[in-house]
Image 1 (cartoon, rainbow, N blue to C red):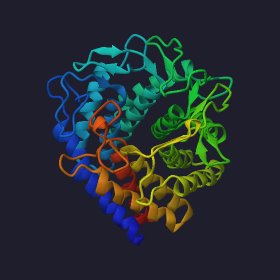
Image 2 (spheres, rainbow, N blue to C red; image 1 turned 180 degrees about the horizontal axis):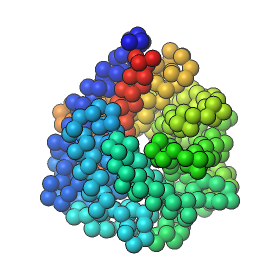
Image 3 (cartoon, rainbow, N blue to C red; image 1 turned 135 degrees about the vertical axis):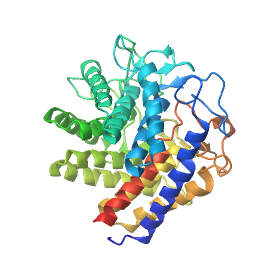
Image 4 (cartoon, rainbow, N blue to C red; image 1 turned 90 degrees about the vertical axis):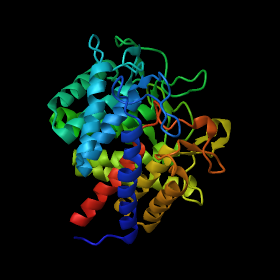
Amino acid sequence: MTKVDERFEKLYQMALDEVENNILPFWIEKTQDKEFGGFYGACVDDGTPVENASKCLILCARLIWSFASAYRVLGKPEYKEMAKRAYDFFRETFIDKENGGVYYMVDYKGQPEDTKKMVYGEAFAIYAFSEYCRATGDMQALEEALKIFELLEKHAYDKQNKGYWELYTADWQTVDSRLSRVSEGEKTTKTMNTHLHLIEAYTCLLRVWKNDRMQDKVREHLDVMLDKIVNQEIGHYIMFLDDEWNSTSNDVSPGHDIEGTWLMMETAEVLGEEAMIEKAKPICLKMAAACLEQDIFPDGSMLYEIMTDKNKVNNLRSWWVQAETVVGFLSAWELSGEDRFLDASLKAFNFIREHVVDHKYGEWFPMLGEDLKPVPSNELKVSGWKAPYHNSRMCLEIIERYRRHTAG
């Protein structure tokens, strides 16, 4: 066994403990909806379900991904059981059998409630189905992922300028609306956030559907991310753009920046093309350095967002931003060998353990104020946008990277 840095060893031990003894047990023990299927759409701090809460595509797809990935990495049968529970409910309720794709929201019983086709959400369905296939070998899941992939390529892909648009009706008619908030009068038609999550979805699909067409599509998408969406001068993503990739906002989201550094490198590595790895590496390292130098507090946590257009900084600490900080800096250390990145990764995880983990009820607090106490208005432990995805993925990434190091 190859000896690893003691800081990396510490990260590994914390990750294993966190995912197996805190994050996943919370979801297994407190969030299964045994009356109507799947998992509850919302739960308060102690895990008590919100009565009749709707079930969001984002939450339900992320549950499939999280438990399938946990089963693939850790091998525990209960994770496979939970992944199948989430997968079966999703297939039964979210798939639009008439128009294809998946609904955005179903009610607590699983009946369609919001039938729009959000490209961001469709990406998570591809991500979930692809990972489920990867973890279990279920080829039906791959077929479901490919159906959505073909619909996105048909309806959402910008053949002229490349990239993808945002939102459609149930029958795939264009809607003039965006997932992310934009200022009135802006001509935003594309967002960083949708493209960031499409690249993770398409990369996961490439893992289980390796062919020239998918290879070309993923390479093109990575080129778009690196050439059009990264502002390479400052090392941050451009958050909102028009059809021709002109920026429509100067705001900065450090959490997405640091998340993107390791996701884009993952894509380059899955492509397996040396030219793409060499292209992505300096850009991703520059972004990681910008985050470390500009967006990290002395306690190791990362700020939420910089609203440049309004001359405001949001200093709240979001749970998912802290999780991505750990992985992004660990990846930067692996790429560069610079101690400052590994130190930052460990410091961010220590911050999470001290402040973000709910040591009373389990799982993580969604948001902390500047006083590092949970924000009362952001108290849902489970919601459409609060799933065991960022934090379980953080742990599983550490575990897999550690295994690669020790095996080498």
